[in-house]
Length: 340
Image (cartoon, rainbow, N blue to C red; front, side, top):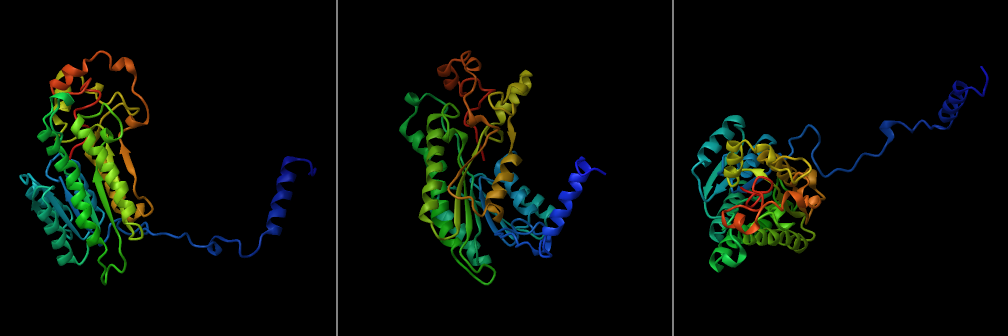
């Protein structure tokens, strides 16, 4: 065999590598990968105590998130909503599927300070810890031009959408600092449902969009004020998702045979479902996201990544659509993209 042939050169290289390799250059001698998260065989939220608001809607993000946390091994789960009509059924289905999870039902207004304090205190008193607070409750408010919106209606949206998450931070953060036998150090995750409407214009009504932009700022500000506590605060910004809030838009499109038009302004060319948001909420609540803090997570199919094609919007009158309860091109966007 000539040394100049490819086979000969490959053989020579192989011999040289083998000769230069030390006995210690084996996989077992490599330094271990440092990790703050669970191993692959460990449930992602094992031992964690979780509170979720806005959990009543059968199509909602809150219910879907409750299932994700239960499926991945949380110890206790508080499902909360102002409307509790479906909460007992949601508790029953979770308890049936995951009998080891302790599920608590709470009916209250997410902007009621005493109610938020009570549910947090109950978690700490019962389990000695709080690990995740998913502040998911929200309302859309009036769909009208800003000049036609009353001050009271504007502030009502802020009360639920922004004051609610603020109260979650106010009471959850101190509780997450509490340590014990099973929780030796301060730690926790606060997740605030914002919206793509809080990141970009033309994706929600004026009060809704403003309230969600405030939630993004709240998450970032509180994250810094909790410096050194190992408590993370992030905003979750869904795009066009089929939930209880957006149900009418999706159903109307199906009845007209125009369902395929939904979501055409994003690169995925479809709307999302609650479970797709819930899985990100699970990630943010788990130790898998141990270095994720103070961020606005857009889960919108790429809608906020660019600008929609102008020709898809010019056919619609913004003023008439807003007054009828929809944004320009209701099937491409939606009145207030997110929902609980």
